[in-house]
Length: 209
Image 1 (spheres, helix red, strand yellow):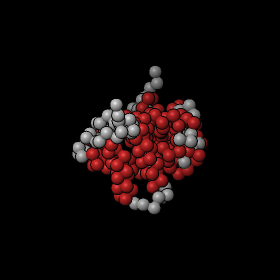
Image 2 (cartoon, helix red, strand yellow; image 1 turned 90 degrees about the vertical axis):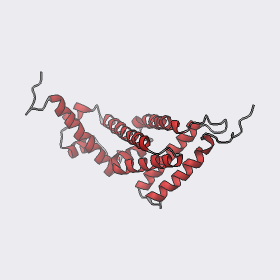
Image 3 (cartoon, rainbow, N blue to C red; image 1 turned 45 degrees about the vertical axis):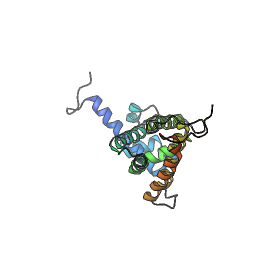
Image 4 (cartoon, rainbow, N blue to C red; image 1 turned 135 degrees about the vertical axis):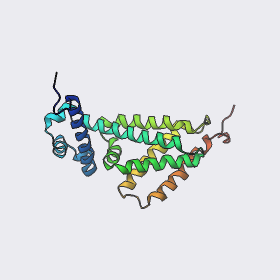
């Protein structure tokens, strides 16, 4: 049995080192993207040797996966909390969701760059797809009508979720000539219009027989 060091158990010390590596990884990706991340660079930033890196991760991909899962968990948690207290009006709920995505990704540049670059990374691509599917499933409760043969709710939400995160990332890169509030307004207009046929009381979009 490993004895506590200065009252701190071995498990707690390991967890603390892992936390330092995660923070360093986010900061490294914020500065240089996935391409700028390496085990050496992360260890230097964390002030730890490679020995301690491999104590928590089996390689750089392991760190990237852990960081991506952390980002998805934070974004999902923020969306869930925001929608729990949001008013029932559909447009206000769409605005709440869009603003939450923008604020959460803006709060951590490492997370936002990781999300944006995950599609091109073999170890993260499937996780990004799964995350999108998860957000679609969570948001599907907002559409209580069954939809029509012409417009599928899951497809509609997937397009909206993927589009919102892409535009938010471009905004964070200053690659869009639009302010945050104007971007939110535009995304809310698009989201409400796209979901209108799927809302309760919508006219049948061509369903026959």
